[in-house]
Length: 482
Image (cartoon, rainbow, N blue to C red; front, top):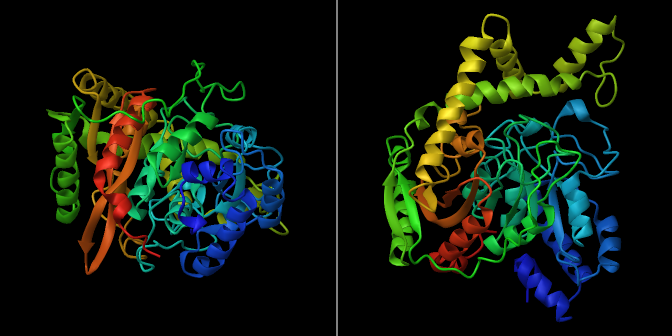
């Protein structure tokens, strides 16, 4: 038995049956990482000895007892680097645990390693990291998606059974789709953001990436809940997100948004997604055509609101209190300017400039205020749709993973990679990407993700539907790529 291939659920059952121990799993994963990391480059740092010590004392009776979970480098783990893959945070060690980390530890999990990402979560390919480029486990010449590319690549290459990512406009779901794993974006307010380095505060949400829907539900059980340290987290009754995983698709109404099946989607991706939707129908789901009429504005609205919030959030990184500081500044202004110039990458600078512009005097009402109004219309589109259907099904990404460097000089084309995921963040609803097959692109067969969306705070239903599809998808019969 190769322990690296097991899901969290399978590992947990093995622990409790005393078939193997958390130490056995960690040692297996470390060997796996040593063999695959030279080509995948998913990690920024690893803390094997500390994790091994935690494994030796793990209480496997806890909900996630002894299970190793990777952490995106935007989430604080006390005593460990948290750079958000940016030079401006070089040398920074987290002085506290993010709430999600504290809750994982309480549930018995072992946070293991810092995973690569696009700098400050700004990107769709993990090419914007200041450290190195992570590759796609299916084809090392291609990107893994982003911004949680390190998390998705680590899970898919069997370096870790699961990881945490963050999703501002698709940054969990899109890399899950391109790498071939499961990625869940919870509803806004379901999971505390305290300890997450903010990109866009009204859009960010922490969530899991794993090899099964059940594993995502197990992690969500641990990290969800009200947090007094995050005023946007919601005070909701405790819920078991694994409770509806045994349901099937009979009678489930799935909405097909006509705006998501138009020009611009890769024909092979479209065919794969349509085949997956037919499997849902064959399994008893009722397919209902719906309309989300303001979809065409989602990308524009997102890149106004997200950059505006990023401009405000990243103002705190000034070279004064922590992180990179310019040497021998002439005065305070020179310290600010040079520290930020040397510390931020080009994509982060681009978004700060865009955000500052749309918030500036004379342009605030024309851009930012108008974008907020259209955001409301997008949310209402979803509310109207969910009066007719239980969930929406559509592609996660309009394409498969593209070659590294192909879009490095075309930011607009890069931004359009998230066209099917952005609206869920604007509306605050929950979404999940599950693998649905392989599509051929320029001689390579690469994963395609099927996205399910459900109304805000309906994660239990969403996970039940996704798991029901997963059980008939046939994906588990596909051999791991690496």
